Length: 153
Image (cartoon, rainbow, N blue to C red; front, top):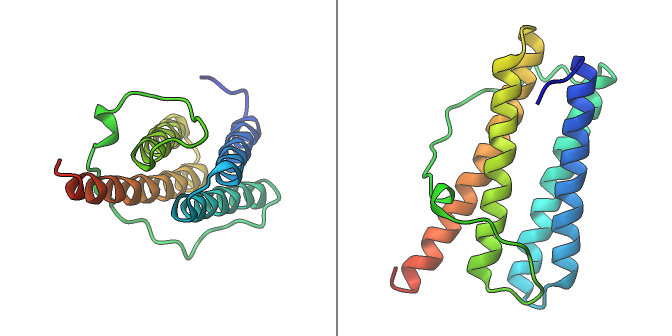
């Protein structure tokens, strides 16, 4: 996907973060299991943080100079899962799979944005967001692995 300007790219990313937060909020509102409800609400809060970070970047408030970039391992568990649509009352395992695939796509988007950008400050912002998404993906993959291990997988 090509963008005409950095601002256009950031606005697109803001919309994607809003979309992700709205998805997690909607799904959390439908869930009957308290553990799933809390997990999804926590994801929504994280996506709102990303939205705010991007909005601050556009308004020049977000320098992010104190943020430390670190390598986040990738278990690649989500790479082997198929995409699904959320349905109320879905199994916990399937909710985790949906969330993993969403984070995988977000990670890919921010990595692509960083690769295609020439401005070092902009690249740093996208690397930071990619790292955030990688952390979410890793956390979900660990939850998934732990759950599957308890099931005998």
